[in-house]
Amino acid sequence: MTATPGLLVACGGGTSATPAPQAANAADAEAPDAKAAPDGPPLDGAGLQDSANAPAMDQGTPLADGAGAPADQAAEPGGDADVIPTDGSGPSDAPGDAGSAVSWSTLRNPFYAHDGWSVKDVAVFYGPDGVIHVYFSAFFLDTGMERCHVAQTSSRDLQTFTPAIVIFDGLSDGWVGMCSPDVQHIGGQYVMTFNSWGDASPKPKQLFYATSADLTAWSAAHPLAATLTAGRSYIDAALAPSAGRLFLFYKDDQTLKTHLAAGPALDGPWQVVGSGLPTFMTANGQEIGQVHENYQLLLIDGHWRLLTTDYAPVTNEGFLYAMPGDGAAETDWLTWAGGYKLAVQKEAFNTNHVDNAAYLADQRAIDGFFYLFYAGRTEGTTHAGRGDNKLGVSRSTDLKLWKPAGQ
Image 1 (cartoon, rainbow, N blue to C red):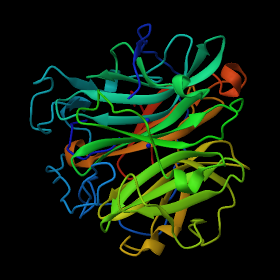
Image 2 (image 1 turned 30 degrees about the horizontal axis):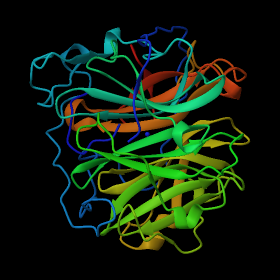
Image 3 (image 1 turned 90 degrees about the vertical axis):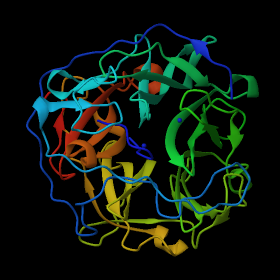
């Protein structure tokens, strides 16, 4: 998976060192359940980029136009013995030119686990130097109670990792924790969105953002859209730049409704778009009737897609939707159609939740594949009901048939 500028793979306080994480293996893969893709925008062509006219994102400043990064020439899927260069150069380079390569055939799920931690809500970003930055929610005992932390680690091969560090925990500001990172490259800088966590907190959950120039050192946490969220609990912020504005998806943690707002910059001013309540429809045009959370907005072949985790009556499964419009009008962002479940295989590590809080990367310009990163668990009682989450990855050429690491 070669690093591509602007490529997403769907979270400044002080840092603290933690025990080194472990790479873990799993077996017992089942046959994939292939699903048909919905009617909607085509899925062939260029890789994921920043949108056209992506804004510059100095906090609190108006947006300026800027072009997205061009995609490299796509390679045939599965070439070069499934060895994926990650040195930022392209599929024609010899694997490991920059000391980094992901070998799909030897990779196994879960590809990341940490002793004593439940890790979920993953966001993965490929740096221009070939380093793969992995961000996630980490649930573990801290100050005598189960707390959540936004943590990060990095790797060059998805098999060995740097020691994980906590980058946001909210403790000094009186929060029980911080969680649910989403990372994007917008207007020349990296932007992470996340939210406070903890049902025991006297303060309702709120949204935050931080910025970085290098994916490693992050600014302090800044409130995000506080004028819209004050006094109520909101979680799972996700941003997308389009037509000189930022669009913000977030979830009301009390009504369980998805909300939509727009603004000219990270510090606003933010305004509700239309009704403020997006609709999510299946391929037959019917409202899907589930709760949506953990959003990721991404541009595929010039068309906007929305990846969500949906539940009730099903349990925490990844769904992909398409925007019928082109995103130029603010109201385009209220309608999402053609939703369908991603057919991720069940393995030994994800028998309970299969693909919770997933994050999608479009790497077709490099090796012909989409990559899906997600959390899986076998039970839902430990870690304050979050369960024993570990991270897995699958890939696909068409967003329909997904094969897990090693297949």
